[in-house]
Length: 143
Image (cartoon, rainbow, N blue to C red; front, side, top):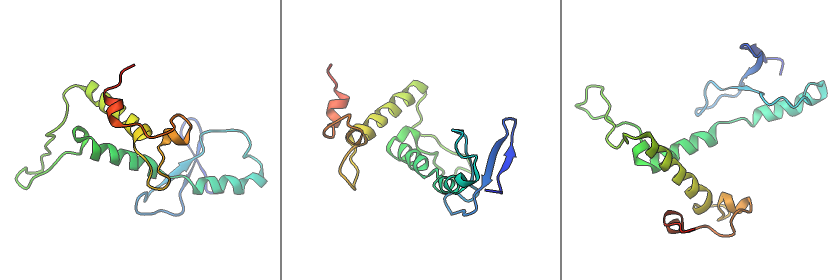
């Protein structure tokens, strides 16, 4: 915790993560939500434990699902004859379509897609649904 460096106009205190790994090789973390209760010396070990839990793995996993499940949002393709150019073959012309696709994926993930571990959806874990919702009910919703 002594390695924290003050950076920027808001004097954020950043720590270059001491245990890099392949998925986050140059990770730096910052405690932005100041709750005012980690300033004492006896609270430093708890703050250090919180720093150890920081990861972007869940965000990277979600973005990977977006790119693989929604073909208009896949990464550009290359071919051997493209001379370094990329080809966006499925990209939508209207940005509103991207928002609609992302909304559908969000509802699908939260209400239809069950976890392998406990066979529940995120909505079931939060008490918003009792069973997984069939995708047809989402797509053909009738109020």
